Length: 244
Image (tube, rainbow, N blue to C red; front, side, top):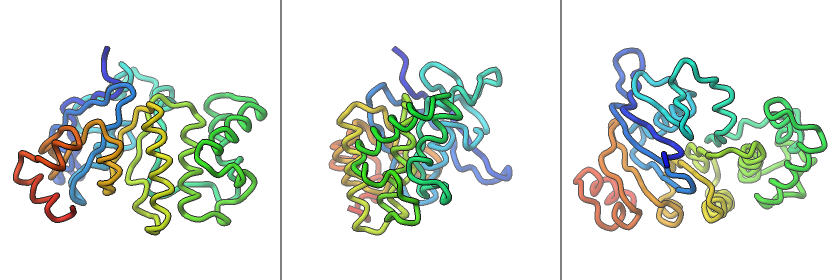
């Protein structure tokens, strides 16, 4: 069985001079949690954004459940509908309620009725622990609550894969745990996830595999125990010596 995500020979160059990603190969099996770590500016978020073509790769291929997103014949909108994406910023519509934010894409993309979309929205709000916020507006929520709404919105589309791009980096410290707890529950439920994060505790607790990226290259990969406790590469050791 092919991986749920397979990135092969991925390169990304900006302005023909900045080589953000320089030949990355990685895979995520169905039900696996893969965490990508590395210093700021290492290319890790670019790799993640290339997985759903928010950034168009300069070279290489990106396969999602057997479909090559880079192939010009691929219906990108259909393929992207299977990918849930959670960003650093919450990207909620301020003029819509929480329910409105979660039902919009369901109705527009999945073609669900108002009744079915609302039922799914309420189910996912229960899942992320804030069912009582259905009728609130984003401005009435804390940052952690807004990010949980963003996660519920992505889950309501019933994606095959969830991508998280530093989902806690914009949060105050006391709000980080509530978002990470939701992500840990998703991992325990068997959701296929690719996560870029600086939260090493989450990586150790939830990841099946960790990739360490620096200067656009995968320096090392392995289980959390291998990467955190027994890194083989000097660059990996130096990175963790500074942050752990």
